Image 1 (cartoon, rainbow, N blue to C red):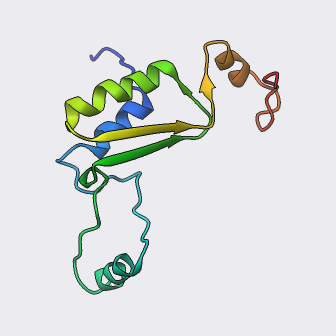
Image 2: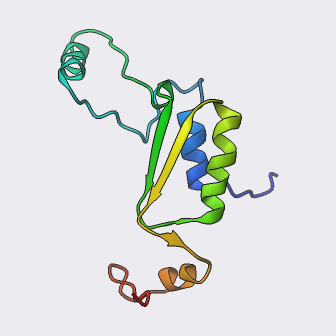
Length: 118
């Protein structure tokens, strides 16, 4: 029997991005932009052309919809240099969550419009 453990979703995503054993992250999709990317995408229908991997770039932008806690932002700050030194990460979010916000968001009766006191 194994003991139950908790691994935050954000940590799973960052580890998947920087894992060299996983060439194509399942949950992350590359969006083509520019003429060369469109040509590569068109050619990839006929030939095996590899898509760019998120860890190939020196800058990673993570946008969290719904909010992020300070501890999650610190976890990303500490985790990325250990996985791929020299990579710069920008973490963006719709809001900065505090411990007081969590019960309000969990138990809101109207999930689309929680009353957060704004």
